[in-house]
Image 1 (cartoon, rainbow, N blue to C red):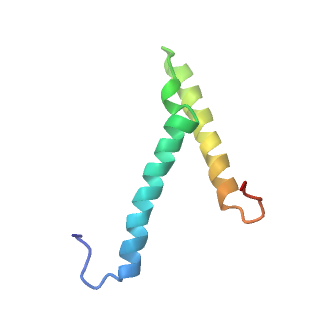
Image 2 (cartoon, rainbow, N blue to C red):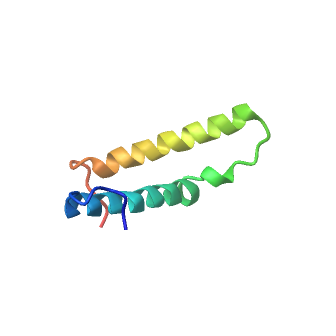
Length: 74
């Protein structure tokens, strides 16, 4: 099932498998929650601006999610 060495601990395999889910979830949030796929402009500058702002918003949300001091909504 994997090309990793047979001596790889199961905990590492599980962690890497969950990492794939996290990446897919982040991409879904970028597209649907933050509007990555909503750009309809025609210039490179406009597209670059849009992607930069969406990426900054994703970074902000990720940092908030990882901050233990931020209260999470119920």
